[in-house]
Length: 337
Image 1 (cartoon, rainbow, N blue to C red):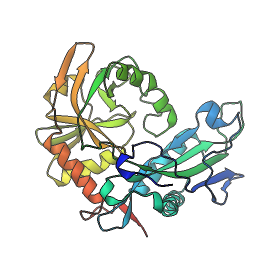
Image 2: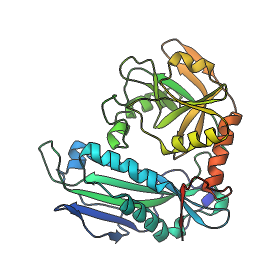
Image 3: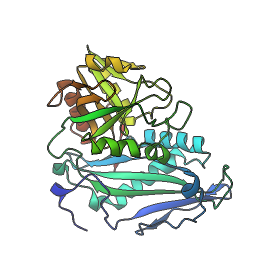
């Protein structure tokens, strides 16, 4: 299948390329099964369909300025999926199996990896899901693990642009002792209504608060919240926040640039004091916030009409590493030969 790389959106774009599946049964993972079939047969009573026993990851492969292909931080993604499997009582996927599967799928779909000039990437999605037919809610030692890839265009086709967000105190994305700290489908299901309501009001993102006092910032949409203030890179700390691998990378870069990095509770009252703020994740890397509206007070906080200099510099630095324009001194990228 051929693509017009300039028109490629950030979404699932069918390619007809190969994906891989493994199945865990009788205490062990079976052999890799490669196929071009985009459908997976699951029982109507399976644990993933009925009780949400599903975890996933999302990472990207980039064709660099030197023509080489780099997969960004697959080992960190493997470790995060292992945390999700543990919390959902699903069979673990070893780090080696995870990384090797992702590298192999990039290699098998190399024709669909966009050229360097397109600013696009090959998005790789590993999914772990419970396959045991069941009606009783308990841990079952049967599962599937699949990895597929799709070319994905740049999140911002015209460059990194600010969006507007609205504070939501009426719906919790996750609870402190729940599953907010792992990447599972249920966390995204619980945010659908508030996201739709925000979009209906003209906002691109929801700024969530914690579920106890509804006073401290949690996540921004499906991404981590970040802020810049007085030479500090600030991001919330909470047991219900997903440990973003992009945020981890940006924190390291900020530290390298001389910023003081703070992971701590952030009170909503602190929002007006920030110089720049945004959301960060695999899809867009950084999404700056131009305005944040608080429906409880009726006040709007304006940050920018164009991306601030600090977030723009961090964005460009991370992209430089991902596309091979700058040395990867952290060992984040895995070359796919």
